[in-house]
Length: 335
Image (cartoon, rainbow, N blue to C red; front, side):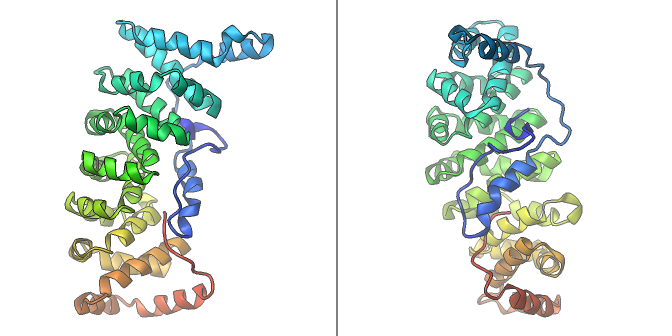
């Protein structure tokens, strides 16, 4: 039910590069948010019909601008049914293409949609948060959404929403956190603890969305300690299982957290060293690079951790990684 449902996944959130590997995060995020068989709750008949008519007749009264204005009027009515219909159609329009996202924003819809994140109606809340996720794909909308006061309501959804609403709230926070300013605002607003809770207790998709959001937030130094204090390391280490399909995402976060003393301590205490060595032995190229970076940080000025790494048999795979990566390694980064 969100932009990632598009088959080509071509218009998903663009991510700020974090050295070399973060340049591939857009594709990874598109892939992780592909439909995967999820059934949409919407028929989309209204917007599809109007789209067909406007293309066939050239009637400007059936343009997206006309539709959006009508839907915004509908949002203001007292009827729950009307609000459900309007948010469902805005959801579809925002999903459809970038032009629609610009029109919806320019019509002043964002503040109205943000208000509906507090709705006690599950359907309205789900459509509203997914609409914001799709709107946030437009770079200009990222600031507009944050400036409309969306961060705290998104955290509210993250805490009490349906599983799908929580997933899309985490994905929206990820999208907004592309900008440095929003990394700061989201961290200070209290989003990290509910993201860590989702990482530990969410659906498989929710856990991936939470991990990706936490990675982005961990790029801002102040947030690293918040992530560690919220208990993220235990959840991250627990997800270092090939069956979970999240190893690369998890290792990227751990590599960032290993750069602070509190992160080093937590990774050591939660059994992170053996699983990081295992990634160096059998992980993906990206996973191996980030695991090596994490171990390097852990062992720096810490003889106990260095001995643990040696006892885990890390030297042969590290040597092999060093030899295979000569002349190729340019940096570390995203899952």
